[in-house]
Each structure stands twice: as C-alpha cells, then as structure tokens.
Figure 1 (cartoon, rainbow, N blue to C red):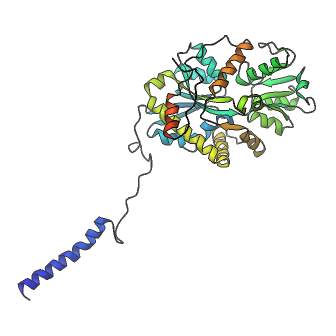
Figure 2 (cartoon, rainbow, N blue to C red; figure 1 turned 45 degrees about the vertical axis):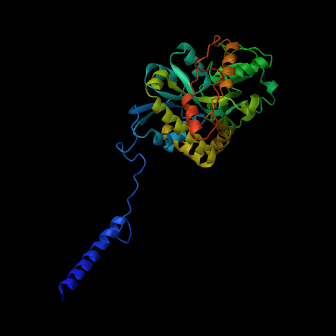
Figure 3 (tube, rainbow, N blue to C red; figure 1 turned 90 degrees about the vertical axis):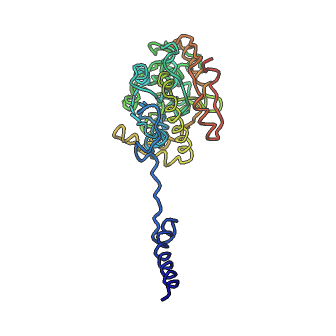
Amino acid sequence: MSAARSLTALRAIAVTAALPLLLTACGYGSEAKKEEPKAAGATAEDAKKLSASEVRIGYFPNLTHATALVGLQEGLIAKELGATQIKPQTFNAGPSEIEALNGGSLDIGFIGPSPSINGYVKSKGSNLRIISGSASGGVKLVVNPDKIKTLDDLKGKKIATPQKGNTQDVAFLNWISEKGWTVDPESGKGDVSVVRTDNKVTPDAFKQGSIDGAWVPEPTASKLVSDGGSVLLDETSLWPDKKFVITNIIVSQKFLKEHADVVEAVLRGTVKTNEWINANPDKAKASANAKLKADSGKELDAKVLDPAWQSILVTDDPLATTLKTEADWAVKAKLLEKPDLTGIYDLTLLNKVLKAAGKPEVSDGGLAAK
C-alpha cells in the first residue's frame, strides 16, 4: 500500500470513529439524550428568590374563602412565591384575625368587610390595607317554613346572625330598619329578636327550635336547608348588579412596604386561582372540599356543598362601593362611628397583575390614600 493510500485510509477511519460523537453532540441519532427540563420551583436553589423567606397567610376554613382554600390546595399561590414559603393559619372569627395582623403574627389575610373596616378604623388607618377582592355573595336568610312563610312573618321571631357587628349582622339590621321595624343593636331585642350565635352552633339551635331562622353565610345556610329550612331571601338579590363583597384580601402595611414583591406574587397566585376556579367549577369545588377536610378533619356532604358553592362568586374586584355601603349601614345601626375610610385600599399591585394578565383593572371607589 502506498503512503498516499495509507494516509487516506487513516483519515477515513478517523472520520468514521468521530461520527457517532459528532452526531451525539448535535443531538441526533439513537444515542442522543434529551436534557430533562427542571421542574418549576423544584428546589429552593432553583426557585426565584423574593425579599422574604416566608409569608404568613390567614383564612377561614369556609367556602366564602374559596380563593384561599383552592389556591393553597392546588399550589397555585405557592408556585408564584418560588422559594418563599407559605405559613398558613386558620381563623374562625374576623376579630382574632385582625388581632393577629395587628400583633405581627400574620402578614396577609382573607377576611370579611366588617372586620376590615373595624380593624382599619381602630388603628386610625395605620395598620392594614385591602389589596384585592376575593368573593361575593353566599349569604342567605334561611327559616323554619312551619313558622315563617313570608318576610312579614319575621316580626316577633328569633333570627340568628353570626356575631354582633359582623357583616351579616349589619346587613340584617339594615334590612330590618328598611322594613320600618326597630331593634336595639346592642341587645338585639325589638320587633325581631336578633340572636348572635356562632355559625358552628346555629344548625343545632335551629334543629332544637331555639331560633326560627338565620341570616348566615355559606355553608351554614345550606346546612340549615339540609335540616329542613327554607331559603326566604338571598342577600344577592338586594344589591345592584347582584354583587357585594363577602371576602377581601388584606395585608399589614408594614409587610406591604417591606415586601411588595412577595405581596405581588401572592396576588398573581390569587388572580390565577380565581381564573382556575371560574374555568373549572366542579374541580375547584372538590379541591375546596378537600382543603376543608384537611383543615377541619371533615368534608361537606354533597347536599350542603353543591348549593353553597353555586351561590358564591370568586372575584378579584374588591367591590369597593359595596364595602362603603356596609360601613354606612353600620353607622346607621349605631355600631360604628362615621369612619374615614380614605386609604383603606391599595390596589396598585393588583391592577399591575391584572394588566399584565390582560384583564381589566378594578376600582378602589375613591378610597385609596391621597
């Protein structure tokens, strides 16, 4: 073999040997290995770092807090927080949640309008901000149909509300006054006996006959119906556009100032949660019930869950004008002195999130800080 032919053969062998390596490096052929994508937020090192290592979020194990229940159960809020851990806390009453926020053991909370107003007023506007809406509706007047057949029949009867001065109590007192009846707001005595009863106790009181009905949120209303009660009035019917705020999202002003990026991430999570709930109502209902079981050890029966879920609307809009109306009702009932609510809302981050998602911005009803 000549030297030239030997050199050609050696070159051919070299090229042939290198070909599999070249093909592998280019990602072709049976030996190529496709790089697996990293799971979003798989480790703390991979996840986006925000300004706080944790955020303490409070909510009620209640269907009117569906955004919190589903957002936590499905991981939709956690996904937006990256490496920032959620420390969830459950509450059974608004005042205790406000106390936790005031005391610095809670950063963000899902809560009703009345405790939001009371908390803001008592701190002279220095403590909390409402940063988003969460839910509308889900409040009904349920009565014993053997004793009460029409709204006029309520006169002289005993009707429960969850707590003196709470959102449903204020709404019922206003409804009574518009009927031309009188009730002492402190004692609850008058043309209608307003019996302040914890929602956990109300179903037993109803079955025992110690109350004739109740103006209550879900799922208590549907529990009463399952025990033989009849829905005499859905509060939604009393409001313009059939909407009124039942749950807000609030934040400590200190936490908002120091960790705006964390608050924004939570709001991205709640907006995506509400979108998912509205797009997947049956899955969301099951998810909320699973979270209720995880939190309380007991899930809701379908005959309670189904009608309760249908009456609640999740929404990013805080429905600010309805909160102002509820404050006016509390003043009218002499349960609240005329408040200055200017500054109770800061929807800057929410509207930023909504705009980025291609959704319409929402209004603070003129109650943002000047």
